[in-house]
Picture (cartoon, rainbow, N blue to C red):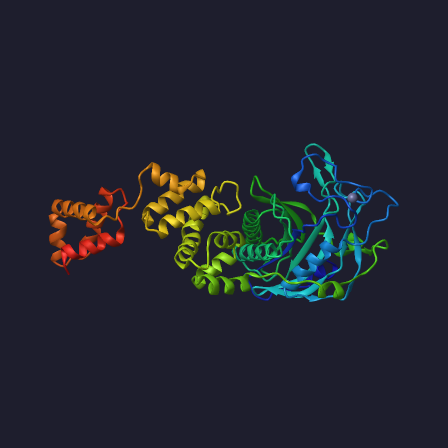
Length: 472
Ligand SMILES: [Zn+2]
């Protein structure tokens, strides 16, 4: 952190009206044991406080910690490699001192940078290091819970290369998505946290602490940028400070003037031997990345480039796609990819939720059921969209709804011809208009046909029959 803080503070802003945003993202790493003791790490699954604790993670005086947890360390090295960082050869663990009830020893153990000078999507990565998570202090009940104390965090510090809340959101999403590809991170319970640094027009850098969702980060940034601009407009200036984000009021509030590295009185931890990274690094096999997965999806399932891109940038969607698609059935793979990327995402966005949100009732079984109905032309696209809109909230099986409500596509030629004859007879004016050259009146006729079939008419067949009857 030392290097990071100093280099950020020394930054000068050349461009006027310039917004600079940097992120410090904490990613919880999945390990069986805590970073410096053998306590369990499933704090996010249990409600009883202080059961996963021992003298090490509750900071008892004189107690000896274990050497650094190798599982957690290799996962952090893997992350650093995926972020194109240069690995350091040897690192020490340092003690970062501050006083808060969630930190019983009075210092947090945090490693020197594992990797430095990386990048992801043109955003610079200053460093990746590993540290122990503090416990949880509940201000309302004045209760402290050390189940989380000593669990493993990777911290990723970016350069202030982002220039808008939207850019920061896209980067955060891509970073979390990439981290998920390692399969080594804790994904339950909204556990990603970030500290956000923002400065405008060369003003002082303000840090917003402990933003705990991507949505929260965007709101906090929007508010903070506006606050700093307003300060400027009345001749004031943002001062260097640490603020907190108040989720309920959607504002940032002052916490304290920003600590400098000196305030933390960093010292090497004499209880932890130095760690040599090269040997561990050589044993790590890198996982498939979004980029390599994209190539694989395209060559294996023959899906469109754009769809493959959307899928791999939302790992859960790519997982679902692969769960329900077979490389031997290209039709269904095509329908699955386009429907997931267009219709499913549209419905999720409309509800302002992610695939992993518990409000989303879709799963592989439901989608596969729907896509088979579409692939077999058993239902029309129209019907499919209406069904999707319902099952995302209800979790019902599309096939059941189709059967119960008789929504099968009408593709019987004789039935369709009768309906179309009927519609044409009743709408002679539109037919005349069409024949007189007003081609758009065909839309009106198709609308009438769909209406009398409750949207179930097979669109292709309708167009074929209409063409034959109207002539061209
Ligand atoms: Zn412990």
